[in-house]
Length: 177
Ligand code: ADP
Image (cartoon, rainbow, N blue to C red; front, side):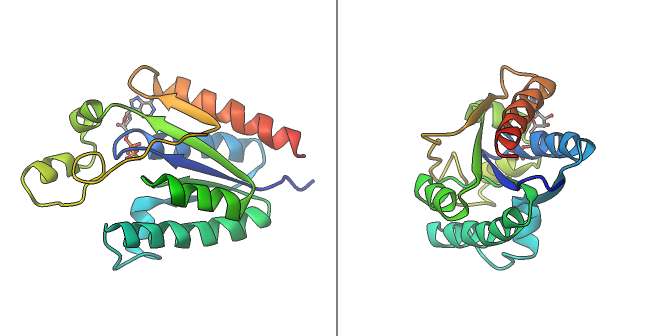
């Protein structure tokens, strides 16, 4: 039996929890027999989008490249878990229209919490002036207007957020089977 593909697009500030949630959702989907691939912002920027910066133009280009790959995989019955800050509403909408089978997850945490977590030490580097154009501080983040699932990771445990996303994605996949 072929499962239908779907792009699950995690958007949110750096440190909000996109990678953590998508990795665990992916494991559970694989256990259930789905074909899964990950497109993680950090990995993409070292490969497919190497050389791109953080201006609006370069961020949009990064998203279009990710969307191109996500679309190919989705058409081939893969559940694609995209974790990328993707701060601009317009380009996320463009990806939704382009890919079609698109499930947006807003991974929401207040900036202060993300700064406190500082998982990758990036917020510290922003403070010391080593990084410019940083989303949430010196560059905008436009929250989704129509996300299918919202995780409030300052109030939910990782397990609660993962369960919420997994349930919603599984019900979407079951509907379309
Ligand atoms: P991002 O990929 O959005 O930059 P990460 O997943 O790398 O963020 O880091 C998120 C951090 O927040 C991790 O240390 C994770 O353990 C923590 N965290 C706390 N609560 C949650 C939650 N409900 N969902 C996801 N991550 C959470």
